[in-house]
Length: 431
Ligand code: GUN
Ligand code: ZN
Image 1: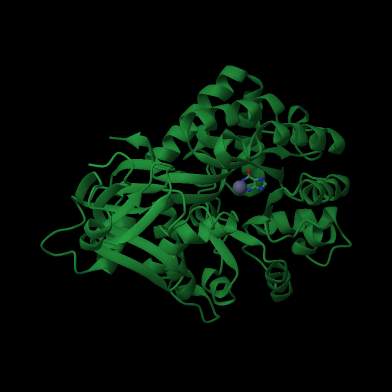
Image 2: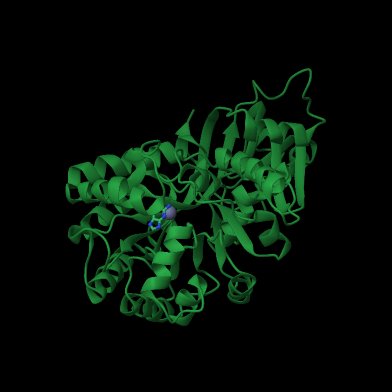
């Protein structure tokens, strides 16, 4: 064995390439170099020839997939997962805002943050776009816990300056000053594993001044932006009443300069053709959150329409609108809701398939985070972020290694156990 040779992980391997294309190796290897980067993904026979001196970690018959990407989630809502009812605006008032105020207590914030990241890793999530609390110190604590856990985060302090309880509000300039201070402290830290995202919550809780300042500093500092768009019909009416001169919801963000090729727009359910064109024009990413969209009775996003138009889409758990951090569950839900839409929509709409949701859960999500040059699949030179999925309940006499589509379907539909999660070549969860 050569100490400097890469480690080979031998398993059943799925590697996404594009929305309609992927590689499958029933007996494959990924080679992970000592610097945590991938140098090979392919057949075991070929790996043996290329790396005869390498140590082999044989995890067959288990399955290796790239780390899962959650493009939209709220850390301070983690304890409320599965709780509450009603629709968005009442749920924010009754469940979310009271819970988010608990983050004034730093011990509470610390415990919740640690549990949140541990749970995400246990479900195979290796990268996530996170709304932290509106509070400076709780966000600082969230970054500390993210660093400790080893996960990759794109995270920001949730900015609000109106229409929420006073302890969660700050004037526009204070919001920006505190966000920039956090960005200075954390952006790019831990070998680039921690990134800062400017996070104006949504047009319902941000003044025109706050939206404009956000766009200004995003351009100045080269920071990306995340926000919510067009989630619920009452919300649409509410934000339209706040910005009466805007053509539509998307125009509120567009006219303030918030739409860029690194902006992440969560939900985006009720978009008119003009809005879809604007989003495509600016090459923004959409975080599709199907579980949340059902839990809060928000609606069904026309996923197939957006994919046909080549809009960047990833999956988001949106905990606690969603009730689980599992992106495997979101992938299943994305398929199921595409069926529901097909049953009830007047317009032509198509069922999404397992290959497509596999892409959305991995490389598609990485593109939304603008991190596809680092993560999302096992291309040479990318960071070795991967998940070992237990194959016990998946591969059988009935579903064999010759049937990759059936295996993937089982991965999404049967809630298999995540045995281990690796980030940058290091095990961060499991055995
Ligand atoms: N819109 C504004 N804030 C929120 C939130 O916390 N969750 C969801 N689902 N939608 C929002
Ligand atoms: Zn959300």
